[in-house]
Image 1 (tube, rainbow, N blue to C red):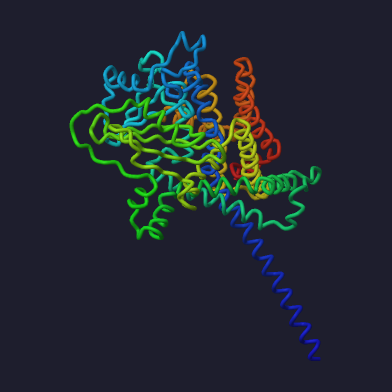
Image 2: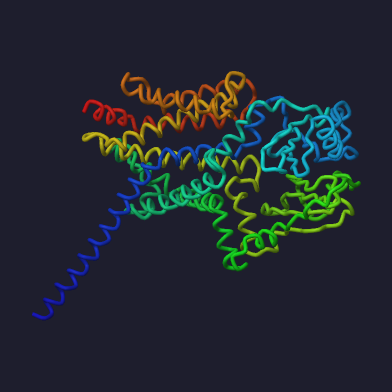
Amino acid sequence: MDLKKQNNKQDNKKHNKKNGTAVNIKSFTKVHRKVGVFFMPLLLVIVITGAWSLFRAELLQWQFPHFELGESSFQFPATEIPKTEEASSAKRKSLQELVNIARDEHGFVYSDFSIHDKERYGDFVLFFNKTDGTENMLFMDPTSGEALDSSHSSFSETVYDLHLKLLLPTSIGKYLVGLMGLLLMYLVFTGFLAHKNIGKNFYQLRLHKGRQIFATDLHKLLGNWSLVFSGLMSITGALLGLFSIVLLVLAMAAYGGDVKALFADFLGTQPKPVGGVTDFISLDSLYQLAQQQWEGYKISTIEIHNYADPAMRVTFEGELMNGFLTQQHVTFDAINGGVTFVTDFTDKGAGGYMYSALPSLHFASFGGTWLKLIYWFLTLALLLVMVTGITIKSLRLRDKGFSTSDLVVTKLSQAVILAGSMAIVFGVVFTELFNPGDYTTLGVLSLIAVIYTVMSNKLQWPSSVTIAGWILVLSGSIVVFKAEFLLMTLCFTLGAVWLFSQKVGRMVNRANGNISKG
């Protein structure tokens, strides 16, 4: 009798344990689905702009073809420019000459400013004012010294700013994007844990058991195969967005809460201006000294502090290219040429490596075009996971219709996809018609996308996602004649993703029709 009771107790424990596991899985799935769909429009904005941000320099070249991507103006000082036929006919001016022209002829007389190279902006010099916090920029032709037309906003920078801070004030935008990174990380790992038979999810794709089962299998399969990449992007994106908070934690742990001391240790401090004007070592000579600091050092940005003042300092920011990309900074006293501060991130422990590695890992800047393309295709897999997630929910609701919140979120997601596709087309293909780098134009395109998305359901027009797919595919066909094969690949593949997603989830519009009839 006692043995029977003991067996019953063990059976009950097993039953309760099994039920508890089932409840946990069910809870994971429910929260995963609800949270993922609710935040889908915002996540789509961040992921789509993140994919295109991999090709920032190329986006700028496609928008402004006359800014050809060649050697940067200060990659070779004037005395070291290779003697090619091209170079002899269009010799680039030295870095110091360009700064003198900017100040004397173009009125760029700021004391603190930066100069950026081709990797970010193209084959022209960009002077960026940092004296009073306002964004004053000057674009210059490196061969003639003439100011270039910068009235058109850069689509490349708008895409990047959307990804980085959603065009919001810097702190607010970065924190919001960082929180979305945490949310994506939560969705990635709860999605992995919420499904039974994890092993089967890596290969199971049932093609003949209905659209809902196929969409679910595809969602699981792509999610599992892109798990590591999606996790990496979400973690690095969250840390980049919330890096100020991370720094505060580091400051609390190692510097007694003194954030300024942390920055001073990592990046150094600049002296206050003394006043007056004095002679200084030319920027070209300082540039050569900076290159000698580390083997394989590639300079990307030059920061000038207290220009022509006795307290003038010049900081060279760049990367070590002889291994995993590592950011390094070196600052010179421009009066005597001495090194005043060196930021060697390989010597800063875990915090230095993290600061240095995060941007490299997130934007694939430690490799060439092929690595960026690998990132691109993995991001397309992530987008398909996101879209099939909405499709699964839509198919589940096809009999009882959408709630108002589900309907709004679905429509906004479709509008985001259409607006993004239109912006890409006008930003890099038909650049003479509209410039979506301008916030107003981008807003108008977004409004058009929302209006079309709302009207398409009522008038039985093709869905916004289908239109977005065909827009990109046709654009890819057009740029073939421009010999822009990279742009062709990006347009074709992203367009194919949107068209394929609609083929999988064609019942979405029918589910929407149920709610509109009700």
